[in-house]
Image 1 (cartoon, rainbow, N blue to C red):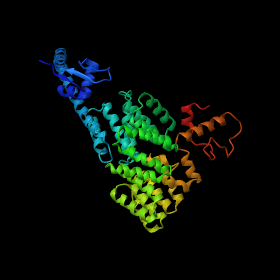
Image 2: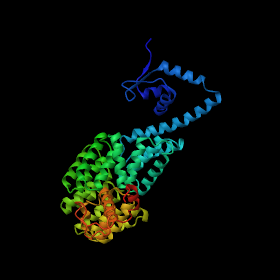
Image 3: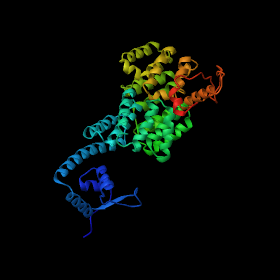
Image 4: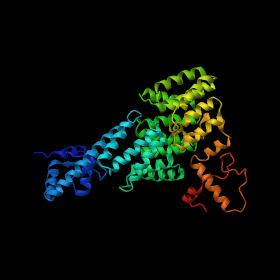
Length: 442
């Protein structure tokens, strides 16, 4: 009689009535008889008779009380593993609509097993994506992600997903641009096809207004999973920042035709419409998008901007009043939306504090401040230029190079000192201590 053969981790786990991670751990740590095609990374198979024999042999070596404790531990881990596996399945098609459910499943997995690296990194990933897509305020989402990753080193920081989350948070939460870039580059050399790594690297290029490289990295991330919302938004946002509004609208239309939608994709479409379409038509279409996603404060801010620049000052002021009714915390998180409306009304100076708040809260929009076409009227303003000097790897490089120059000469840097091809004067950058220590500037 032919032996029953099981040809995947899933079928082996089902046969043993355990989760895939538990079965893989049994194989790695206790010699569960599983065979590989083509080395350790190839397909797996096992024979049911061999598995039964292994279970019998292991059972014979366990004392009764030991067996009870092991069953308890395996049950707890199995329950946590099952919940995290369900979240993993949903993660492959993550969107603004299912991120809340994904995060809840990972959190429930942690309730069952607080030491699950799988659930901790999954929750961190879900919170990062929730911040990017404005499902959760960035200040709240990133704080949760930071805490989840903080617990991982105590357990197993060799996990690649945890390392990528940490690198992303260096950029989005800590604003350590160079540290984040170095971490991403090191990790991508070892694991070049990682979605979060490619996405993070693309966003770093956005912060430095390097649109060709940003687009290349974003398309690489998209190709790994075309169903993910965050890359669709980014692929449309990059051409908007570069001033190619037609390309931004065309890509948004293409993605929408595939059944993809979401507030962030709609927001980029609205931004491009506000810069390219005739005012009357733009307002009509932007208001339609805002009505489709009434929870999006960013879309409301774009409506206010469009009304303001088209001369509908009263309606723009009404939108501003609506946005200002939010709590202080919420207003800070939605600083970009408030700034847009104020710029539309011609109140540029009042917009800058809200952009600063947006940056401090970790808003995804703040990464594009250097090149955002709507913010161009603010260029030259000392306070706005000071904000821009906090954004991107180029900024840190310039500041550190300037500090090194000053340390090597007794002469002060002239007021009009020009650095590289940046095309503007750079003063002595504030708060260099951390960066100078990090890079060993002498």
